[in-house]
Image (cartoon, rainbow, N blue to C red; front, side, top):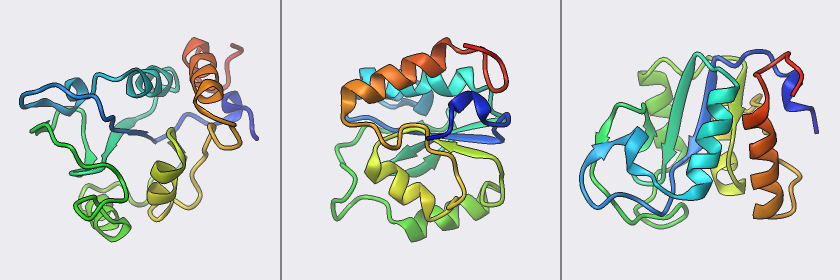
Length: 150
């Protein structure tokens, strides 16, 4: 695995949604309240991307300021977004050609996002479970961003 500090400052970081949500409409940045989403968000912010996008299992690619309703749609279910829909959204939002891109999240999230950004960096790849992912996310969050020592 490449060290996350070797990444050039990303144009885009994509983070996962989360199963724990508020019970009312809110900005995407505020909707997801689970610890995994929050850990991904902190790590993403430490990477200082030009853009941050949330990959929602229900809505697809969300800007943090997009207002959404709560939902219960896990990845892989009939109501979940598809790679084709995500690719369409990425083109509509001008995200499809961004590089470098960093994907933070588990295997389902990364597999979907790689349909758009096959070249993306995936610093959580190779982890053996949530504990390792949280540890790696915490290390990224403690860093001063790409090119700086932790």
